[in-house]
Amino acid sequence: ISASLTEINRLRDLFDKGLKVIPQETDVHVVAGVLKLWLRTLPEPLLTYRLLPLILPIFDEDNSQDTKEIVEQTKNVIFGNIPVENLRIVSKILSLAFEVIQKQETNRMSPENLGIVLGPNLLWDPLKADACIMARINKVVELMITFYPQIFGPTKEQESLL
Picture 1: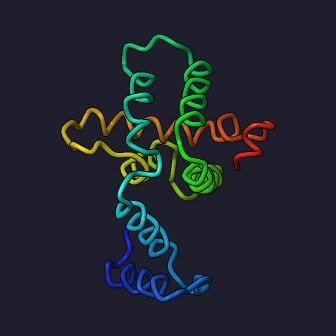
Picture 2 (picture 1 turned 45 degrees about the vertical axis):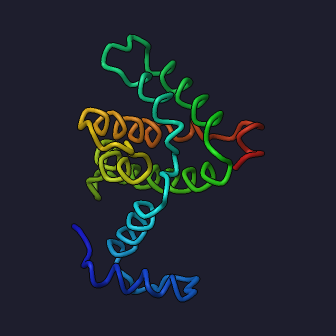
């Protein structure tokens, strides 16, 4: 279900005027729409253009590593190449996404679905040249949601950054 563009713009305008708390009666789809709009209007994706050539090879179809190795590589690339401010925001967004997938039986939002929804908003190809790249970006985000505790979990290094 998507939100009304009018309602999204109305809430965005309230934020632009200094709104700090979302009115309780606001439809959750409107809130999600405002978040996605904000992410898409950033001059650079939160996961940064620098990350793109570093992370995509991990998700090549011919990568024979097991999931545990892919998660560890992803974690190392993310923590080594994203500004701390971006990392904090990404962590909060993916923490919420991880909570959402805990109720996927009722909300129908699986890690794959959330990867498709959030992927294009967290990382994009500046050339917008290849649909295969977008599919791999969605897989990156899907893995980051599925393995959120392993990637962003409480290690001493991660706690100091987040």
